[in-house]
Image (cartoon, rainbow, N blue to C red; front, side):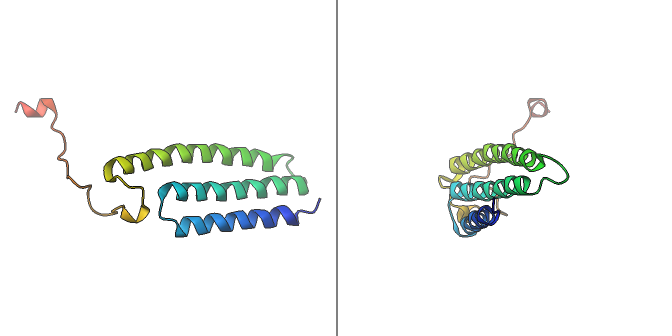
Length: 118
């Protein structure tokens, strides 16, 4: 098997993922672009495992499984953050997220019941 075709395909997938992360404004599309990059890495790991089985057998496939688990956890946390962002701001545009200001409405911290009686 010639490993050039999967490597070039993985490089293209990774390039499209980087472009999506850098140019997209929608948070869901940014998450999809990150997934595209992780799938490109999986393709490289599996291709390297099948072409060079010198030291550790099936090590690339095991690492690919770890990347899949990492991607599942990333999507779970990422979608939770996007849903909370949508609830607070009514938009999922990445450019509209303030990085230094508190959210609009500025809720005061809740006072505990034990402190309220003092």
